Image (cartoon, rainbow, N blue to C red; front, side):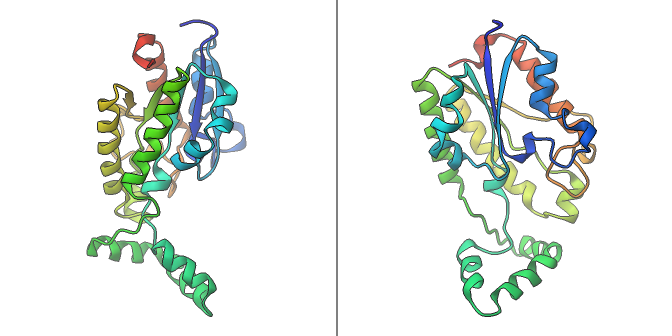
Length: 240
């Protein structure tokens, strides 16, 4: 790989060191990739709640200014996340007298509320899968237009502890999105990388911070190693 090979990592807060102790702030996976392959020119655009719609509509600001040879995109947890209430109802309750009391009461009891919704098969999502795929398609087309390669990281399954105790039912939604994203990538001959690959912890509890969607130091190391293995392979595999 050429020393001038420039890679842009685009991610929501999962790509940052969110939640890690201050002395581990350099342990997030993009910086670990840079450390292990120093000849790369790694750039980063990471923001809390970053969505594919944001990357699509702000492509010039987020991607174009870096002119990367390769974009590594990690998004999806925001879109496939199950909400405690539908967006229209949330917006209505914000303006109704006493509405905020209702939403706070549900939020404070969200574990039980989410479990009930899960048993009933009720799923509230702000962004439906077809809209997600449309934005992803727009991003791919713009990358092709400017000859930027594109690697898509799958949405990491939550730990068993988080799925059980905090966000029940979310992994089922993640699996649905990942199937669709994988098919999207296959149809367009893109690399779709399972972020945790063949990790040794089947519960994924060691890969996440407790009760969190954010990665532990070990989680970042596993993702970084899988990316390093990909990037050190045949560079043609990650080019368009």
